Image (cartoon, rainbow, N blue to C red; front, side, top):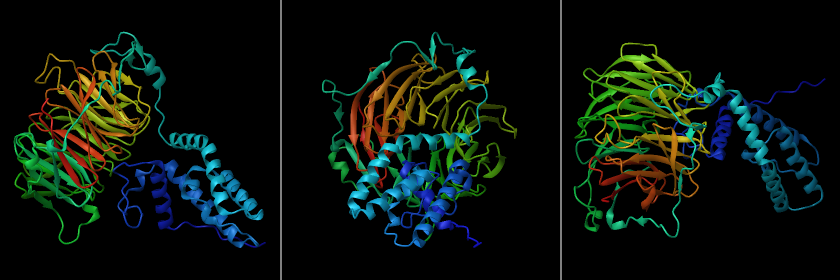
Length: 552
């Protein structure tokens, strides 16, 4: 009996399968970056970033792909061009589906039909089966997630503690919320180009930006391996200023050609506006003065920096990384004070509750709360069923909000284990959340405390944090994912940015209406307000930062 040689996938072929899988799925998480020219995964990506079920499925399907290709190559009188099996077929179809495509192609070839007809038939078949195949992929993915015990029971029980609901339906009070959609009778004012300054200086996509909390400095971080600090002139952005040559302070960490491992992934100012921290793809964090002088390089993480935050006092810096850990840095000595190995998957976000305690969240679906000096968490929140993308404490440190790929946003309290409110109205992954600068502990204590959430379903939603109900749906982006939301300093307006419709929308929180909009030249990746609340900066995939007047 002739012994067969097993098919083996090379590392490049596996990387290409993984790349095409995320590309076909529309997945754009910062953790999954790829070489732009070769289409191959960056070598520094941790295999744990890929859910085990997906990786196993990719390997199995890749081997099956190669085996079928070998069989076809060895078959006599075969006229089938194996390249007709696209990478999307390998990802979305099971073995039976692939065999059906091959049999169909053989039949078409035998009948003498042209390839154009074959492509048309295959696309029609793919369209009919796509829904069921996508569902199967979702089921396979969920099998590899840790199940959350007692979740249905937790949702059914009324929450205890300070925040109470009246009538709860999936975490939202009964009653129909406002559904705000711009129409012919309510057309928002488009921000004219004369009120916008286009800041140009980066040579690649600008992924993050932040205003100084004390002055008119604007920092931006890019895939070109640099961060830049811009001095934005005071006063309105007039047409005469648009042609003004702004000269940034370029914060570079390499010599010669840019290194892809030095892409800037996160940045943040300290409370005094005197220092800027920048995180990089290679896991390093650099500290700069506001004048662009390099103060320190923090080297401890073994994976890219997803998030970094200063505490209010500025005595500590917290970083979260794809290496599954969080690190507390002493800003007097710039030494690692504590290294927290608290998660079993990449740490996606960190946020301070006060000067001495903070929270972390992860792809492992968990949220951990720590106090400085303790290596073990004082609280672990479990309730999400997919990656927790973002966490935010309210200004008073009483409530923690979280959002997840499981299409939910939640509000937690340290006084109980179960979430206080479970918001389930989004139809897509919830990418980010923000608290309004209102309520106890803010400059607007008499105003209602709201939570804003943004999702891949193109909606921005406003939630009443006390009653746990949906206040209104803000629908202004064109069926595209909303990547960023930010309240104005007085809490009266909300800015949102979309990655695909290239728009920045400005909403009136009180009226729930879209009042201004601006279409940029690239995907809007982040929006932020200056301290006065009269300017918005929006960084873009086309390498620019748009600064627009918002004097309303």
